[in-house]
Length: 149
Image (cartoon, rainbow, N blue to C red; front, side, top):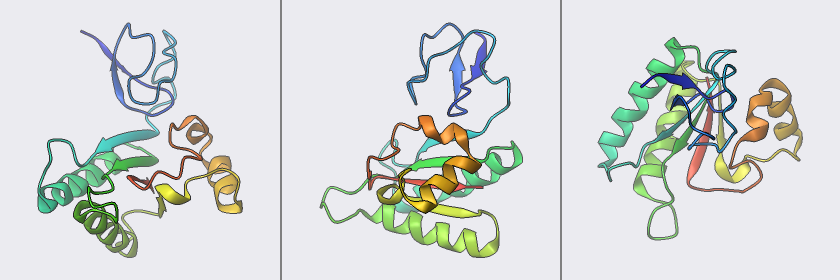
């Protein structure tokens, strides 16, 4: 079956879907992927990986997304079953700080701070208007982190 890219989140879709299963944006025939990939959602906790496996997935994702022209990634790392933050979340945030210091990523926005009402949020939405349709905008979701490449 043919595929296209969602114009809002940049995830690959099967043609003929009424809406994107990732961001719930309506799929408009002929418009999907017309402006190229901007954003991708990556579930680092899919399959219940060990911390190192999630970090390996993060490294591969950043490398591939940068080379494919993505501008932003939403990393789903979960919040942990203890309610105080999980091992994957802590390790991912630590690794993201390292990648930022290396210059491989530009900005890190924790899910708790991803909102459009602050000065930082308004600036982010002006730079990346496609994020205005993000499902976690203004939800203070501690289980995700937005990465600007």
